[in-house]
Amino acid sequence: MKLAVVGCNGFGKVHLKAIRNIGNVEYYVFSRNEDNARECMKEFGAKGYFINYEDILNSDVDIIDLVVSHDQHYQMGIKALKAGKHLMLEKPIARNIKEAQALIDTAKETGLKFMVLEQFFFDSSVRKAIELLPKIGKISLIIVRSTHLNQPKGWRREKEKMGGGALIDGGVHFIDTLLNLGGEYESVKAVCGKYFSGIEAEDTTVASFKFKNNALGLLIYSWSAPKAPRLPAFEIYGENGSLVEDPTTRVMGKPFGDIILNSEEKIEVSKTNPIEEEIRGFLEAVSRNTNVPMPPEIALRDLKAVLDIYNSCSQI
Image 1 (spheres, one colour):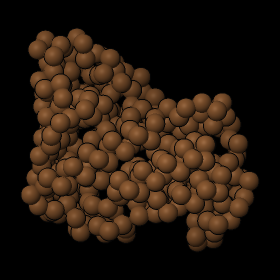
Image 2 (cartoon, rainbow, N blue to C red):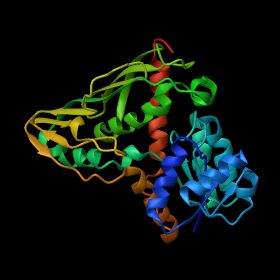
Image 3 (cartoon, rainbow, N blue to C red):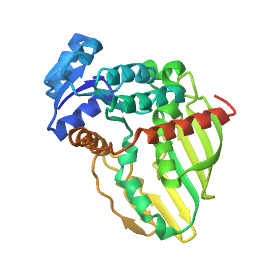
């Protein structure tokens, strides 16, 4: 198989590192700046480079991995699928439901593999927490949080290119975690604000969910929390006890650490890199012609939740 990573900056390099570690695939890089493309190729040992997206579409590359601004997800993704390329797409799936649904429909029409790369879906800590849920019985409350200071540059400052602000970018990861733990929800209420990040849209969100199983969910996400303490990323409370993520056990490349059951029993989880897990799973789905390990409908679900929060926010 041949794969082209479109994006040599930021998270594109994270993808390239993971692909290099996985092996068993011939990979290429893309940057519109030829010097950058050449350096990226050398840095990650790629087979070659592209500086024109149309050249990738017309090449014999089998898979395109898009790591681009949100406003390009739909346009570049549709072109990839219509050119006969399997598609990996960095989260979020798109800026709105219309764009997202068009990507899903086009993948089905063409018979090609399509997956949004949402590494939190593959995180071993979340999967272990889901496995342990029966131990704490009927759930009353789930808290998911991430607070830090982020003052991004470039397109992440622009509301139109982002499709929103911090929530649709980094916050969608934690939405995925909350929904994987809580299931379907029936209502959401939220407040949003803009403070120290320097972006055009919201940088801080507090949202409350009412799940269909009657549990409550609380999401706290902020790019305007300087010098924030290290707190559990998720807490789950049930009639028989609690499951709490242990932030002191996090390792590089993995968002969550081990789990503490009932404030006393430490449950160790595997420290596999979820980015490598998701890409490896997609490559196997292509080579074996099986279903992708994360259906794109999950990413659509996450986007709908983000948009529901935006629609309920008292301030954006």
